[in-house]
Image 1: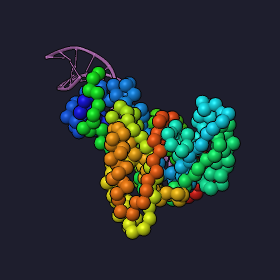
Image 2: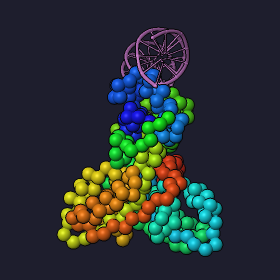
Image 3: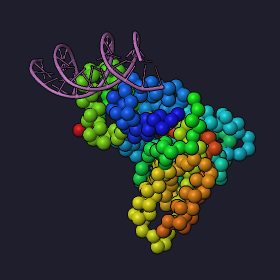
Image 4: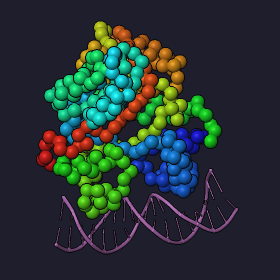
Length: 158
Length: 158
DNA sequence: AATGAAAACTAATCAGC
DNA sequence: GCTGATTAGTTTTCATT
């Protein structure tokens, strides 16, 4: 992981379909050279995949909500997580330190679907309550990160 | 927007670098036909971009936090939003209905950087307080959405 | 670990349906 | 709006340094 790798990552985070030829020009390497580096980054698990970003409303997902899940008592946490994983409406899921145990981002078609999903989550074993925040407007999402991967304070080995 | 478009979207959300040849086989169309459809989806703003997913810790972003921002009083909301936009550590930003006004996801190198950023957010004009939840473990993130885009209750025109 | 050239494949364009 | 063919460009392999 050197500065060239970080530059490659930066470019691919912003434009995931950049050709290896173009990527090579950006970082000053030949196409086979960048390709080999990208393969290694993928194999190491640094690059975990490539995804098209889609306007949720265009595919009928008009409602975005952030749900904090409070747990307690009887339930087995790993079973709860499995149940959450089965719910495709849950796009993001984090185990958190704070008032809640889990924090999830969900997308559904409409308020009725939201109501149903919140009821379903609330009835899972171990869930004591939920706390829902509804997104009125998404200003931006998944912006290519903070330091752009550059000037990172990262281990330079391997 | 028909079922073929939805299938294309589904595939590209999961594998953003799928070739048009492979995509054509998935949906039962020739390569030029899918290419034309993808171009239209991009032009319509349904597909908004392609991005590599990166393991944040691999690029030195070890801390993920969810921050609710409470506002009130004097500040101009649009100025506040501009200031937030200038902070590259903020990956997601939503205007929400709930206890908070904004809800943001931030990624930073370490706790010191988190402290600095929270102080900076807290000092923005119009911000009355923040409420931070720290992610201990990200179970999943950006999972290709709920209904997979299929069987959507969507307008079939255009 | 990178290069330059070659082979295989894909993207992009276009006439025709 | 799709197909099939064509051309241009890219990915991938490989011998070489």
